[in-house]
Image (cartoon, rainbow, N blue to C red; front, side, top):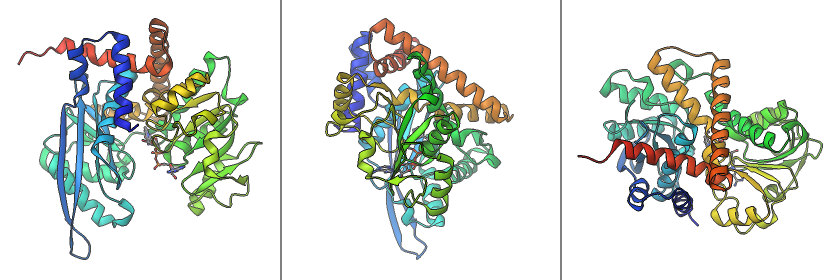
Length: 411
Ligand code: NAD
């Protein structure tokens, strides 16, 4: 099942549980605006090359739309639509005053030089600058983009609208980025994991963890779990996988990855086939890479007792059903990885205030937001007798539906 069909299915289930009026349900599902633009740039050798850029603005009833921009060869409008919709529910679950959006350009960033990437980003910004803005739609980095990409968008946008640091988040610190933003998604995942485990009388230091993906999110999750005394017994990424049943020294693995660009030849563990990671014996499995990795092919073989969805939509609906029959507890993506957008919100607030918070304040506020959202989700689970995914979806959808109804439809 593709990402959009899966996301729509979760939304419809939540709408049914909430008893949402069919007309509201339909209006919440249709994106506010879909933008598709042609981006042609001269390459370094003078030849022209054209790309297609998207920005899907899903909903703005609770505030400016918010979501990443990804540069990836397989960026397609269905997946961007699903991710934009997930952002709407995610910002509502976190209870930050935003709606949802997502964008991307169908390109292979590693095949473009730095100056080509800069030109492409500036052309894309020129095409969409009237439709994004501090109070309209605030992009952030995603797969294939980073703080430098945000700096170029900020610069290009500011040529049209004056200096506007709050138009993007995930910026470099020198241009108004927030302390703590780089670690925020991983840190939020760990706060969320602590909140979940406490419900079961467990704590990170007593458990074993397997982590798929060792990029921004996975490496922070691994390091913070290690710091708390948890045993990370298996890690994989696109280059390979490593296992050590006595616990991997994650800071050492991070240094090895930084130095060599790969997980291979790490002396603190044994190599293992990467496809074994998701079905490896462990207490907690944390997918931190791609969508759709848990599906009907492998869900029956998963041995973890808890799954923390740090990646976006890692579990497809068929796997969801299989895992729930096996009593595996799944902490859903729209809550588990909301730490990134929450600290993006703190960055936007700091830019608007013109005042920089210290890192301790950022982390303390992040913990407060994550714990509050977990309590709100649990309340929905109790009221509607549903699992954590439906608890999170009903919480988010209900907040967006209420805002939509309060605003009304009068032209
Ligand atoms: P990243 O590009 O920094 O890291 C991705 C990691 O996945 C890399 O280690 C890569 O090697 C690994 N990977 C790719 N294909 C793989 C495969 N087939 N098997 C195993 N590993 C594979 O990306 P990131 O920012 O860490 O994001 C990871 C996930 O978290 C994505 O789903 C993203 O949408 C989601 N997410 C990220 C943020 C954020 O703030 N970065 C926020 C919310 C959600």
